[in-house]
Amino acid sequence: MRAIDTNVLVRYLRNDDPTQSPIARDLIDEAAASDPLLVPNEVLVEIFWLLAKRQKFPRARIADILWALLDNAHLAFSDRVAVSAAVDAYAQGPAGFVDYLIAATAQACGADYTLTFDREAAGHASFKLLS
Image 1 (cartoon, helix red, strand yellow):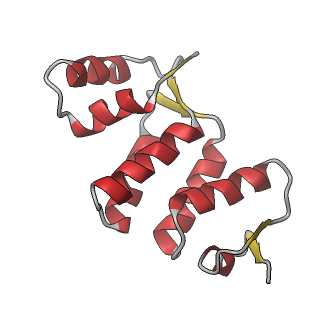
Image 2 (cartoon, helix red, strand yellow):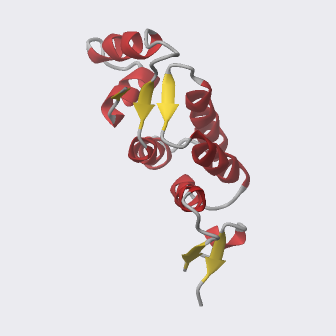
């Protein structure tokens, strides 16, 4: 299995570089469904940061982009169920995608909940507020 870095996925999503974007698009589009490219969770964190903080995309658009990545048969994820749960929680809740990804990954590893000081995140059942 091969993995891709954030910059490859950014060039694929933004199609903004005349040299690198076609390479990224061909790489991803031509990956076999039987041998998809791995998108590590850290890449998703960086993509979220780029979309939310640098591009100032609204929450719904970010969720749509993340769903589209999950639906792409040419891409694989270390834990598709956890990523899907995180995108779903992000689309519906007030906290950031990264918070929900942390909680979903922790639950996938057997944690009952994630302890936090973040009041927004604590509104979700996968968190417990420390006070």
